[in-house]
Image (cartoon, rainbow, N blue to C red):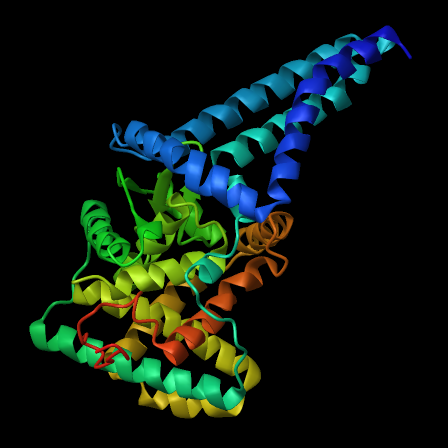
Length: 378
């Protein structure tokens, strides 16, 4: 074995060992939950949020820009140096080792900062929510119930003239109150050092097709403030759930929904039901399309207008970049224990079905809320 190869292998030993340890920890969901998700991660994420909270802009986006710049400069310098030393091929031996080291260190940093949360037990299971399957008829009944709820909330918003657009600070405040109420029912949702930021490049994020995202290097929840206002409360609560270590997308939707329902703000409660109803209607279109038109006709005009506005918004940005990024996100989720990829977002439907089936009094507001839905223990 050439000496230069032995030298590179020695430098690979540490990242390979750390990666193997992290991978083995991730194989045991209970161990991950005990020592990482409920042990190490909450303190780490609170510190990251405190640090990033000292800046008025999305610090994580800025860090990404710097890292990408450093990577591009390093790649350029390496390529130029390799070209100049082509006859002895020394750098050509180093290239695959350097690439592997970079990938391994990225894996290690990602898993330590947040990624191990993908290996924790299902949050829905922790909350005691069943995963009973539904028939087309039962799904339609769920759709009808959510439509009644969204119609009631929409009417209350109009009656109180309470519809509004939020600033990023107002979204952070409203979502923090919602999670405080939810944490009163289950400490899993305790949210310290709240940090919610607007994305730096709204135009780019629109073209990628993202409503928001969590930044592991800064602990920030980033929200696309260019979205139609009706979407923003739910998106904010969804991204905050990632800050709390809820990594899987369907469970982040579940946490966002529960947080919205526990909010004293009508707009937050409306956004929660509105967003989940959209998922349910999409599922009905897949398994019982003949029932969809009748259900749509039951939705009040204001909510129908909100859905149209949202659809028109995304139609403007439905380009090639969105398709490419959707494919990349799909693969990323599959690598991180979400075998359905982007389709896992739709799994929220089965959680909500079981919530409504069981009433889940410990997770919903203790009072009879504006949807007129009273729980078993009342």
